[in-house]
Length: 187
Picture 1 (cartoon, rainbow, N blue to C red):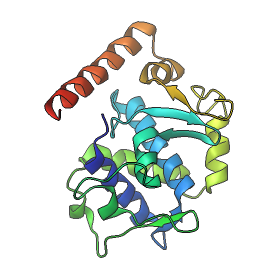
Picture 2 (cartoon, rainbow, N blue to C red):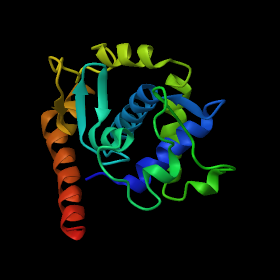
Picture 3 (cartoon, rainbow, N blue to C red):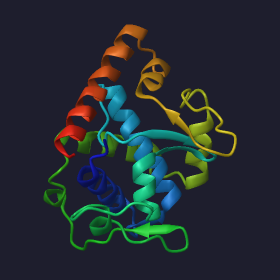
Picture 4 (cartoon, rainbow, N blue to C red):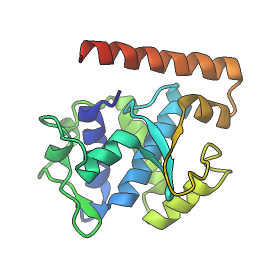
């Protein structure tokens, strides 16, 4: 279950690192995927807890993509309070004068992951990032969705990064349990 407040601040933090605090929506979506993936690699759990899908131009966080597209409504202090509406395929940081304390939903570990991903991929454009997500050496979990979208499981990512099946299953089950509890609490 997506943690909208958290992913909104992740997006805001990423946008704050860009010189003009504006970037293509595709680049932002690719970076957010790489951030959640890096958190899975480093800590065994994602930052956003969003569902992941493979699409024509690589992987995205499904509900985050829907928020950015305006398909689902943002909650108070969520996506719409951090990220501008898409204009000419670009988004920008909506808040002014942000500092590290502005990102109170993010832990130090989250910030470290975001900073690492930014260092590695922040200088790439959206098409370079999309190509990287199609590269089996970088994202072996990507499968061609044949013009549609296809779920990418946490289990698949754990296997693709070299974890054994038992560990991958255990970590995936923990994420599923957390999502089930959050879903029940928010029902």
